[in-house]
Image (tube, rainbow, N blue to C red):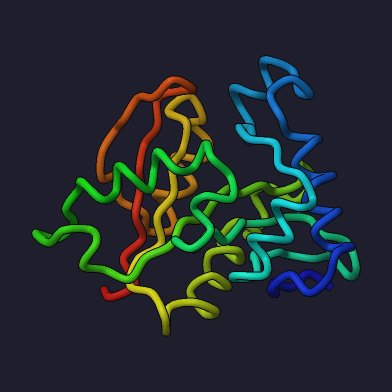
Length: 184
């Protein structure tokens, strides 16, 4: 049975790391990278545990196996994984819907990944439905960055209602900063 939920234990965090490892650019072919997408960052168990303590991440499971995840990174977690700090700083300079971003309650989806055999089956949508179900009572907006080279991810995020705020380049990549507005 396939279902979405929040992370409940260390075993699920480890399964997230295993799925992440399988989808890093260095572990997939160039063609798969171009057609199927990829994850940019590699986390460790301690980092995921720190994220989880502040706000559990969303996962989709097939029985006991994690087949997809979308990491929850609240503002209080911004210093846990330094590569994400630049996105939080950028948000502090931007406006959304004619208001400064800091006037909203928001958090970042830190990374999303769906196992190869579950792509195109609605699992991606399940992740974001669970994010909204779990966190829309506390937050107005969900924000994430996507490598502009990751065409599949850009298309999938647009399909579930994300809108591009800005394209920004840093020392790592060029990113589309996108937002899902739960007030609408």
